[in-house]
Every structure is written in structure tokens, then in C-alpha cells.
Image (cartoon, rainbow over all chains, first blue to last red; front, side, top):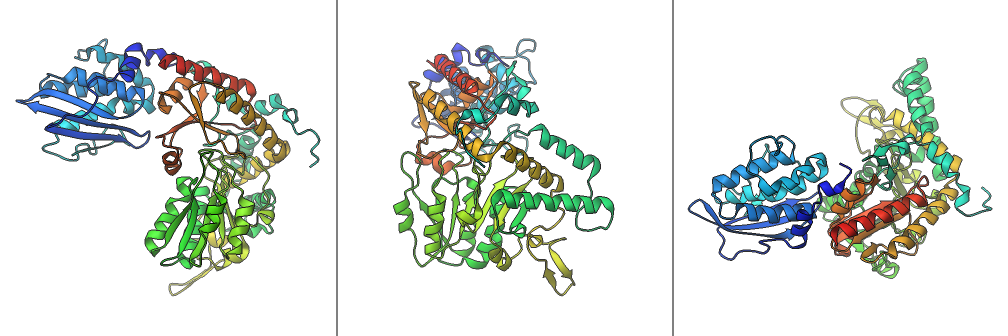
Length: 163
Length: 414
């Protein structure tokens, strides 16, 4: 990819500048932390899940624009969604970022999240975009499992632990 | 070598660039601007040709057979050792040990010297500028032996504080492990003075020369360090080869690092008698091709002249520093008075990985991250930096492209 504006679109830059749902929730019942030791991206996610529905969600942390915008847009996309719908988005987002789902020709629910499709051409940045989604997946399971990602983790080098 | 004109004209840059086939590459549809030389340098055609010649007409295992190819490979491998000896101005060629790289060389000293001569309560001095390769092995040793690491602090320019360094010595100090040049900031440490200080206290010194060897002439006898480690791939050679220089009397009293073939005189199931140095430290089949190619890389660098390289890169650094420090919103990290051609910087409000990705879109290769020197990042309160590092085949025009690229990043994120 030579035109970086295909990836760094205004919507991504805007979410990087003004991340939505930024902070931590008091009294949240789901938490997880995602960490990418290779580039220092670090995401803390907290949620309130009631009756299988994500009522509220917030994130905080340090990261590059791709990671921060991905986290910001993710929180917007899953707030108010059923857990199963969120899990579907996690899977679709991962597949898009790794190039196994073409959001323009295959059925999906990604909507605005399609702006991240360009990372598939930048292998070193794929994990930046996926980290928040991994962390979401971990948080959704944080009551049952503390270490969520195992051998099947598609992102070598990413470490995620529920807390 | 007579130095008449200490300036940039002493390098025939068009000739030099044409020696490196990879510099003709297009990346993202733009001519490659390779500014990641501190991580790994590129290889000139002469070294590539040497590799092809060795593999096509000279290869066999060394030291173990009487046939033509084995004798030829052995001769070329040992000739490379002598080239390294002269490159370092070491007293003897048996003081040159081939390793896989700087990291292995440091680990060899940790195992061979450290485990034998450093014990409980002893102190090892390191600097705050070290690469992880010169921290972690000593930490492992300290943990095993109950020894203690002491760290030389630095100022805000990234220069080590020599008075504080002196104050670290006491009767328990047993070793100093120090970088010659910092990979993250480019600081050139006053190693000659620091080695002399350590020796006044009877403390042996290992210098990590990975970032120094490609950029300046070295003289082991003048530096008087006890060990010096560097890598081939940062000085126009291949990966998989490095060098440990050690004073013969120290190497002789050290324990072998690895056991195996070539490092023995005789083996029975009761007792093995170790070979003499350097063979004692070269167990198994060494990277023969890579060692010979390192010899060719040394020939190539000598052909240009290390003094010319140092002067040319100094001008590149001065130019880049002037250009980048004039940009609002850009902070240079590492502003030591004596620096190698490394420019670490951060752009306000932009994560270094975004900087690296956007520059890559213009064919510009820089490194972003912690540069395997997390304590340096912590010292300057940054998670990571963007780092441009220059070699003698880079140009001022390439630095101009870097500056345009940085401006583009700022515009995008404004």
C-alpha cells in the first residue's frame, strides 16, 4: 500500500484524536487487558454485561493511532449489542484484518469498521488493529477464564489476560 | 592513512551506492531510502560475490580433513580471522573468536568468565544505555550467583555520568559491561577513559561494539578493553557471524561455553582435554561462509576507509540533526556531544509506529519501537521512538526525503 491515506482515513485519525468511550467504568462486571509487547500497545477494557447484553463499555490505554481508533470504534459498535452479536463482530473483524474476509464482497456486519480493511496489507500492523477485539473477546469470557487466548491465537506476540 | 580533506567529498557516493544492489530497489513504488542501518546494514556486491565464490568453489567443512576443499576452506576461514585481528588491531589472531553475533559473544563471556569469577555479593557494573543483549545475560548471572547489578546513570542528553560511574566502584566490583556506542540514542561513550578507570580498580571490561565497529576505526591495544563484541551484519557482512575479541590470558583461564567437536584435544568417557584458544570456544561447525564473507566486508570497508566513513557519517548526522531539530513538534532523543549517526526522535502526538508506517509508504525504512533498550525508553519517559540510522551509502537527499516524510506525518495528524 503506497497511499497511506487508504489506511489513515479521516475517520481513523478522528477517533485517534478524540477516542470515544475513553476511561474506566466503576462497577463494571467484565474486564480484560490486552498488551502487545512488540510495540507497547496497551488496552484496558471494562464492560457491564446484563442479561447477555453489553450495556456499557469503556477503554483506556496507550497505543498507536490504528490501535486507539480500532478500540474507540469497537466500543461504539458493540455498545447495546448482545454478547453473541459482539462475538460475531470480533470474528469478522479479525478475518477482515487478516485478509480472509473481503468486507465488500462477503456478508458481514462490519459497517463503518470496514475502514480498517487496509491493514491486511501491512502485516506488522494487523495486530495493532486486532488487539482491542482480542481484548473484548477476553473480557466477554473474563468470568470463566483468566487466560483466554491460547495456541489458536492468530496474532503471535500478543498477550492477553482477563483479570 | 593520510587525512587531507576531512569532508564529505572523500566518499565517491555514486560509486559507493552502485556497489549495493539493494539500494536500487523500489518500495511502495518509490526508491528505497534505507535508514535502518543500526539494525542491519546492507551488503555490497563484493561481499555477495565472495559468498557465491565460496559456495561455488571452496566449500567444505574445516579443520577435519586432508582433501583439497577442506584445506582451502580452512585456509580462507583462518584468513578471515586474521583480517578481523587487523581490523581490531588485536595483538594475536587467537584472540579472535567467531560467534553467531554480538549476543552470543556477550553470553560466551558471561558463561566462560562470569560464572567462573563472579560470585555471591559481587557487583557487575552496566550502563543505563545498554541494549538488552548486554543486560539480560548479566541479570541471569546475577540471579544464578546472587551477584548485584549496578547501573551507570545518564544525563538528559544521553551521556553517562562519569563521576557517578567512578563512585560505583568498590571492593566487590568484579566486572564492567558497557556499550561502546548506544544503539537507541547514538551516544559514543568515552570508553578509553572508562576502561582505564575500571582497570585502576582491577575490574575487567567487556565492550559491546555492535554499533561502533561499522562506523569508526578500532584499536584493541589502545582501548585496552578485555573483551570486545560485534556483529557482521551491521558492517556489510551477513547475519549469523559475530566476533568476540578477548585478551589471550583471560580467554585461556576461561571455561568453554559450549561442548562439542573442534573444541577438544582428546575425549575419553572419563575426561575431555580442551583445545587451545580460539578453538576452545568454537565448538561444532562454525559459520564458515559467513566468517569468510565478514572478511570480505572488512576488505570492502577498508577500501573506503573507516576514517572516511566516520567523517562522512558525521556530516550526515550533523545535517539530519540540523534539519530535524528545526521542525516544530519534533523532539530528538539523545543529544550527546559525541554521537554516531543515529537519530532517535518523536513527533508530538503521533505514535512512532504510525510514523514508521507512513514513512514506509514513501519507501523510507526507519525503525520504530524500543530498540531492545527498554531502560533507555523508561529514562526518557517514552514507550518507543522512531529511529533513523545512517550509513556511508546514505545521502543528504535521503535526509531531505525523511524531513518531507515527517512533515507529511504531521500534516496527516494535525
